[in-house]
Image (cartoon, rainbow, N blue to C red; front, side, top):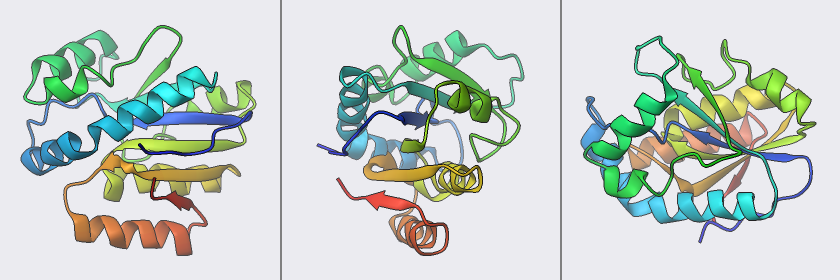
Length: 179
């Protein structure tokens, strides 16, 4: 299990798990989801059980329509549906769409986190070397603490993942939890 201590003032940010895997790195990413999906699910369930806000921020794949239901349905019906169906938002979870790597870039995430009085974001999802690390560094730039639960993040390239996690930790001041 991807064990991370959660406490008051935390929010779990679930990045780009609503994925249809129909893209250049889709096969590699899906293989990683199959390997790490259980850790993602357990971390999400742990946050919900602890009363920690769970916030999904997902790329809308250039649809520009904000149709979250379509994102969920397409992901569950897609190649990775067997994994994704265990990761979908539940009642009480918040959902934002994004169009850039960082979940903060031109979204209302900073406003939402402020309204929830969040001090630290805990990140799970995909892909570690892209949207996860970009979001963690952006969180630090917003004055928040950031923790990446590496075992609950999918990747397209293990070597690139290690490089990006090292950068996040050593340069960005992000805590990396190996789970």
